Image (cartoon, rainbow, N blue to C red; front, side, top):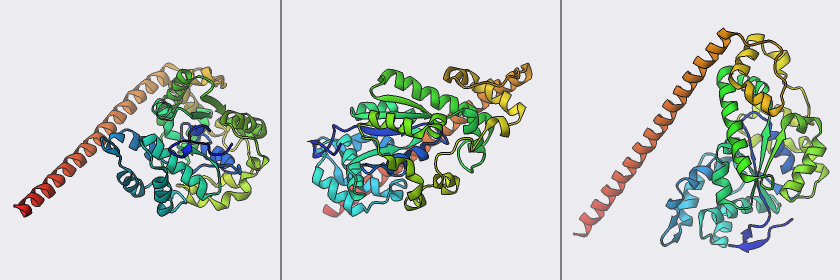
Length: 345
């Protein structure tokens, strides 16, 4: 399915595919598979789509859409700088679209990325958007969401092997539970035509079957080149952040790279299951045969409270920084205005 100009000269018919998840659940693998499709282009994680959407009144002005302000913000954003596309090309393509709102500008941006790579379809892989499905679904009526879910104990193992994200097993359990539940709740509201859950374990065990189903969901014909993504990993893996933690992209789909049964201690399994065992059960994952003692239950409750307190404190600090930045910007504008008026008098 190619681009179908229906509004603002960009595709609003073909689904806009979003791959979301709790981090370390295999989204980079799924992105590599889809990006190997001859029609589909998926850039590095964007982050700015949701960030800019929350302040889109900055671009959607009474005088029309401020494309210059949008592109200026875009080109300064750290995530866009990791995209393999020249800013001049993006600006030219966006100007040709002449978007009338934020959603149209984003479509134009992704269409430009696809064209630059010789593709006709586009998607996004930003795991944290699992917390923003409702916002994105309202913004893009054509959006479809693939929620990749992996056994949380293996997710925890993966995070503990990195230098980013969750730093402790309890923290990994709590955030896995929160992110997965949020994505599933949004998916229930959207329904099966726009939301699809996929188990990471199924993807690596039966990649052809899973990808064929996902292609149908995304309105794409399945292409066997998706299974050979690892043959071209070197062409785009260099642009990944933390690429040292994505070495397995050079291999075909491989099950058992991490196994909580083998690599987690009995106590760690109990702590994880005390914090997120209900969700494991809801998803059909097996639970440890060992019972959870009262001491572990109390420890888990204490860890949950302390993690929540840290999260609230972190959010407050971020809000404080944003407020200070806005105040400084208003002061600078006032100073410039006063100086301009003074020079005119």
